[in-house]
Length: 123
Image (cartoon, rainbow, N blue to C red; front, side):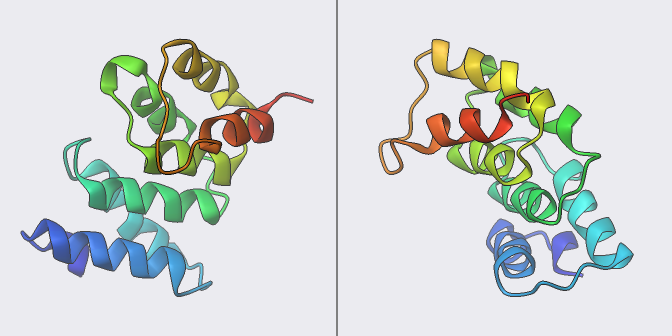
């Protein structure tokens, strides 16, 4: 499958396509997305796209990955914050607040972090 391609651009488009252009949710699709998340370096945009796709599918196995990638020391990209927003899981709330305290912001989407924190607030 495309997630195995050596070209990051191909992997990125494949993961983006699974996330944006299909609502199909099968075990094979999730397995492919998990391989994309865990098979590439954290800096790989395809892995971030796959994380957003899994979040949009409500995959409750990804909070540990989100927590690691939301660490301010990891310099999270906006797609990781977007994944936390999509999943809206309370386990990511403290990490998102820590990220805000670190001064992280996305110029292109200035309300992204605030929206993610609100979506993940316990209660």
